[in-house]
Amino acid sequence: MSSIVVISAVESGFGFLLTSAILYLVLRHARKSYHYLFAAFIFICVLWDLGILLMMIRNEHVDELDVIGRIAVTPCIFIPALIFHFANLYTGKPIKWAIIVVWVATVITLVPILAGVFYQVEGYYSYEWGNIFRVVPTVFDPLIFIVWFGINLSACWLLINNARKTTVLLERRHNYYIIAGLLVVTFAVVKTLVTQGIDLAFLLPLGMFLNDIFGMIIGLAIIKERLFDITVIIKKGTLYSILAALLIFIYSFVEHILVTFMGEKIGESSTVLHLISVAVGIAVLMPVKNRIERRVEGYFAQRKLEF
Image 1: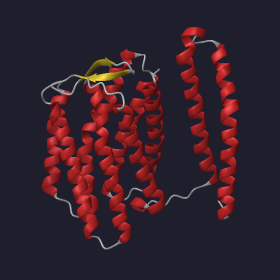
Image 2 (image 1 turned 135 degrees about the horizontal axis):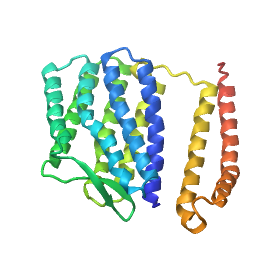
Image 3 (image 1 turned 30 degrees about the vertical axis):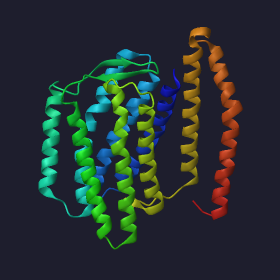
Image 4 (image 1 turned 120 degrees about the horizontal axis):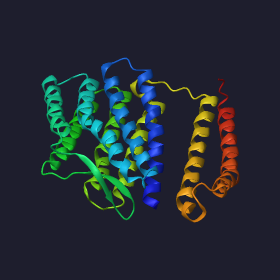
């Protein structure tokens, strides 16, 4: 397992947890149509992060990559339409004819994809750094990127105009947070180039890193600025649960790496590897756990919060 695969797995795993939390918060507080459009967009991001995580973990099982790829890629066709529709409703001045045109263009694009004409996932590319599902190249491939950038950047332009016109400072900041997040997601599409035969190892982790940045931007906007009127109350028990889940994920990932790197020499099912994993968990993760507990206790004691 190469460093690129490991880094991409960590980034996609973190992104999956982060976007899942955002999806939960948005759906829990959803009251308007644009909330559900944004939630649908986030749900597709969750599927993509989960798909990349599974592909990195199962990277040597090449017969599974195209199946996971189809599940992860196909819903992404709807992202530009969802973003554009969301931006129109969020600004409060929807351009109805433009929304219809975008959705019609999306359906027109989707039909040949489902019919197997272009952007078909079939087989895999085997690079020096790892394996990834393969998108069959066609002359129509540039159309996907033209539609992606054209519609997404148009949505950002609508939000920029809305931010300029609003006189409420908080609403302006909300617009800027969303614009920053959507721009990051738009350029995160560079990660898909490795699925089209472009062997640049940094593209996949770069794209997944940009996805994580998007999640952090929206998460910060929700916690700090109450984006979408979402109020997050940080409870001590919830915070402990989240941190415990992260530690369990790290432990499981370390164990998987040990099995992958040393399995051929020691034996993949050898109990030695599991004992090493336990030792690593005790030696490294337990001190980290204790330090986190002290920080959390200090945080709540300092602010004298009661939950």
